[in-house]
View 1 (cartoon, one colour):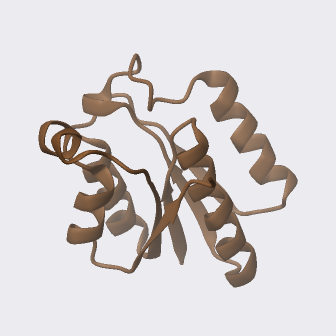
View 2 (spheres, helix red, strand yellow):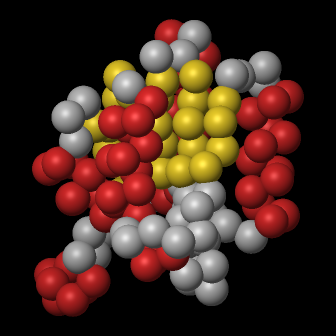
View 3 (cartoon, one colour):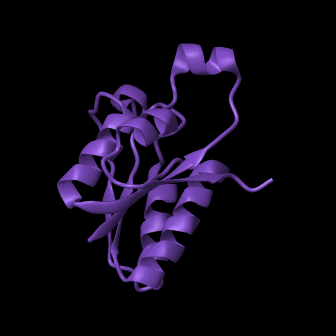
Length: 131
């Protein structure tokens, strides 16, 4: 059994990972972390650099959590990758970070969180970044 979390190298992504860590520690499930840039672009701000990615991997290992790290470079969208990973791993839940966005921002950029919430076949926990 697994918990899948989407990760971005910012406060929202860290809030999601922190929540997912707590869940994985309490249930003993494997934590699967997914990170990808928009349309697979490693130049996108949501794509974690090697320093952040390695630090997160080391943190999870130091906590003794069973975990997997997935950072595919060529994907259609982050939401589809999170959903596919959840299906492939038989996830019991997905943890995603959410941020406040304007209506216009949602219209033009879409929402990874919204797509995951609407299309997931397992429960989804949406975590706000700390204020």
